[in-house]
Image 1: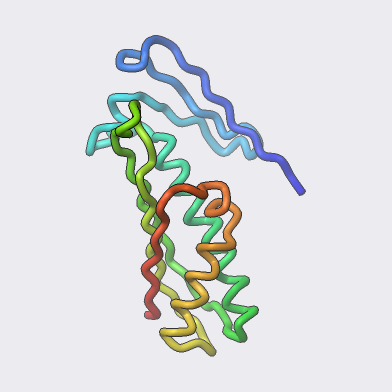
Image 2: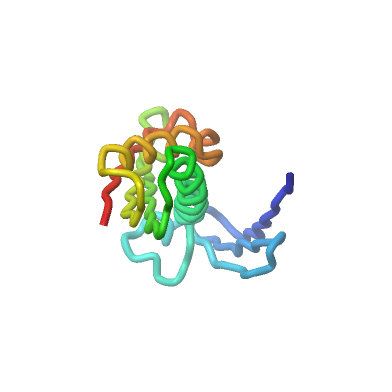
Length: 145
């Protein structure tokens, strides 16, 4: 199996500094990061670790769900997955990811709504990114379209 690499170059202090995250393995882009933008409602063209985790989780979950649906006897036609990753102050100090909410709308043949919801829960539990985030509350809201 493959190993993937990203690199961050950071200059300055937490609140006044900034950096760039490079997706080194794929070479698809370099993205600006900043702590003030990380915690602001408007990201203003900057990404954050939470957004990158959301991207990783939504794509991993979609792949895993397509496999679980097939294992359950269904055929995935289309899956639309979003992941909302929330950063909050940690009572122990600093910050922590307090939760991840996965939402999936799927067009699936061969499974009813209950079967789709069960497949989504299974995919949530078995997706490698979910496994890596053990200790973070992860929820899934699944609906057929």
